[in-house]
Length: 278
Image (cartoon, rainbow, N blue to C red; front, top):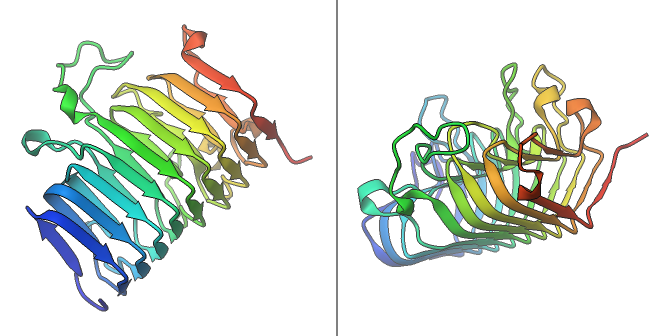
């Protein structure tokens, strides 16, 4: 699939497998999924030079929303996107969310923005927005495993002052998510960000066995916002175990930065290797 506006745009389909394809030089997304049902499998594909458009259209390797009972993205090679690598929007509104997601054994590199975004609804009350109206619980991003992926060279487009990108960024309301045994290195922005904004709540997040190093390489004004692993103020019940997080730039030399909170027991961090270059 080459030189197309959006090679695959699948809408309201059931039981889909996309495998052994090459996607290249797409103007916008290579694959976009909407209102899918059943199981969707995307495996053993090669993506390169996706999202050449300068428009506001999404320009990702894979862009999803309400995309089936189970979404599996595995064993793909993805190199060069004009925006995000995997944009996994779980808030399906009236169409329901993606019920279960597994992202494993992929190589994701050279995205101009974030490597993987996991996004739930922004309107579920968190610690700093309890006055906001409650959104139905099925609008959480949940039951997601991101494991054994290599994510490198992302965030290549300069971020504006005060902004950043991340190899993996959990945005909106998230719960019951596992990030395990990923290699995250040489990204311009942060390695992993949980939240950071005040607009949503997250809990039940586990990070284990990840190698996160040499991130935050951007030399522009966004550098001081970058860190190896950042846990934002509205994410609780986070377990950080057995990770190696080191040589990350920015934020006064911090590799793991847990945003100050009144309940320090909400974050459990044990057995992590963390050090800074001399």
